[in-house]
Amino acid sequence: MAEELKMDEQQNEKPLDKMTVVELREAAKAEIPGISGVTGMKKDQLLEILKEARDIVEEAPAKQMKKKTAGPPKEMSVKEMKQEIGRLRTERESVRQEGDKKRVNIISRRINRLKKMTRRAA
Image 1: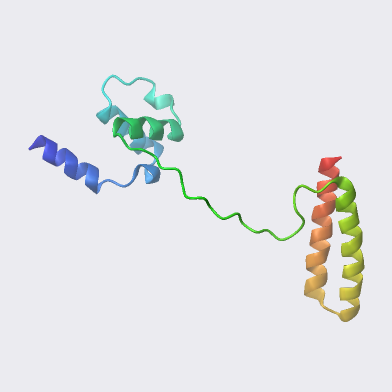
Image 2 (image 1 turned 120 degrees about the vertical axis):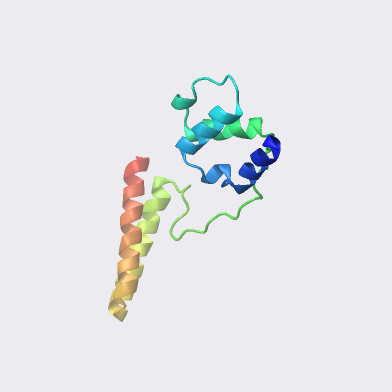
């Protein structure tokens, strides 16, 4: 009877990843006899211990698609970044002649971002 209640409670509680640190600490104290130092543990440590205690095997996530970001690749050298800045400046001027303010703003932000990247890289 007691085991059935315990199984029902485990099925009704939310997943470990969604629990707060306080809830994880209470669960660790209740489920793992003789555990010490629970109050000083961080969430990832508590999750690891509880998953071991419950014999939950964490599967590696499927290969995720890399997000495509606008702008230059992050592996550019300083020289390449400066060349890109020059190219963007000429493009900005031609777009400014056309009168597309939104596109001019986008290009200006890209130039600004590249200039910051060159300062960090130097």
